[in-house]
Image (tube, rainbow, N blue to C red; front, side, top):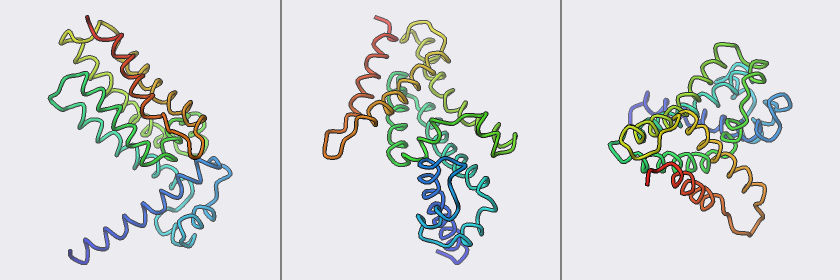
Length: 208
């Protein structure tokens, strides 16, 4: 690995360290109460180091969203474009979404609670519009998979967008409900409940 490549890798590692810590702090305290001091403390670096990469708390908040939403979007598009049965594609989309949530639980909580009206208070209109565009693109992947299944006669006729919203709401709702029931040392039913919910939804969507 050359010097340039090594420096780029080190830079990305540091950015990931900062955004990972920021995700936790923003999720726990909200944007207004979160401080760069807290983020620096959790990341175990100086606040001055954070400012080498992010000029303001607003820039850090935006980059946190943008980076992780792009990662989610990139992989959902890849899954949706696979030459597979639409039912399998939908299951794979939900499966990857759960893996993404498990990898970035704090960031996913922020994404699920995203409100454009609130974001407009701390981000520029262009940045909020960009985040909304990526989130809409993610929802679209589910809608396109449903649309493919409808055209192939696998799924019943429905509005693909409405179906996509129902699936996402199911996913987020199960996560929220099961998280509230989690107790140390007890069984974790998040994944098994989501799988059962997907089975129920598809049972109603598939033609018999």
